[in-house]
Image: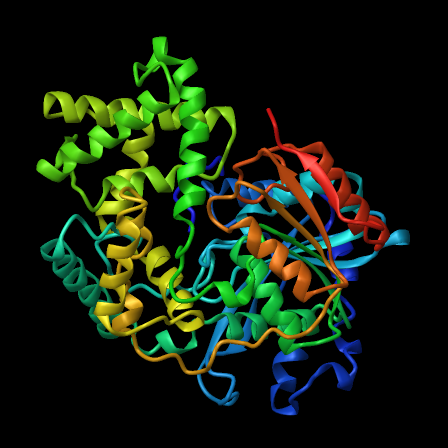
Length: 513
């Protein structure tokens, strides 16, 4: 789940892309596992400009790279290929070094629920010289991004809330989650059974067929690593070069999304607090890490007594831990400053009874407390409930909360709280069993607060053909790319994508700043 602040070139003739995509008719029959799906694999979608309107900055950036976009038709329900269809948005930035073209590189940004197309320009830049040798492909998973949404009409962008301090609070949160699930059944019930990683993987394979590729390379970020694992298990032999950044180990996803990350988030919070203490003259949060963390504790204690008034919003005991969690995982100085500004605002609200929101909170709070991003939260939850439905008995959650609270009073009630999945429509399929071995390059920071480093190590053990890049002294979730700019990681990933040769041994990079 991504709540953190996030900063989210030459035009080439469309004929270059048309040439790159003209292999559609050459898809061998062996590449289509189910002949009832032939019409989907062999379709010829209409490729056009990626610019949707005058305000579409990502589309304009893609157009400057010569990208073209299309809507690929897929079945809503793959068990009924003759039934209702939906479309999946696809963008392709064509290779410019056609004499040395490697193939197609598909990117998934994670979430689940994050679009790929709007971030494709950044990925293209991160690839540097090797970008010229790939047709870079962004697929917005079904119901995400440029696709028709799955919208439960929620009053929030995320179901995540802390359980509170006692049984009464938990009962309140149980009713809240039950209500979210009921809204989904009422407003999006016809789509819920078909929002899953298994169907996203099937859609990805249809796109592979449409692009005329026997195999595709793949870059998966965060949840995108799980989607890649599912794809390799469902469609063995159809990947070439594989990179996973922020690595999920499939067995560790259950029983609910962030279970077990309490200590990692506390470590990341302390890491930030250590920096904030050196900036006490600017932010006034405390002159030591312990003092800064004590400020956070006082903010939460104040919210327990009475919700903090920040602008027109009331931030209660259920919301403050979510805000502290939501801004972790970037581990760059601009975000450190954003967190300090946010905590200073919350401190003012706790001490004086009211504060005006800072720019970060002004951007974040409408998403958390209005229906502004309801479709994002609805779709993310639908995927999570299909992939890791978890327990359905509220008492299981209550016991987990009570066990965790004693050791992790801030994050324990958040990461163990009940979710809408307890009241969800049962998934149409069981989660995928990932029991294969695929040569892949795995990347993870030791202090990652979203996906534990232990998961990357477990996945490395499960896939002995893989290599692992360990980023030490880093509290970053997903390391490869422009924002974190770790040259050690970026160079190793790009070298592998360019040569197809994994490092001869596991690598260690420093994340120290």
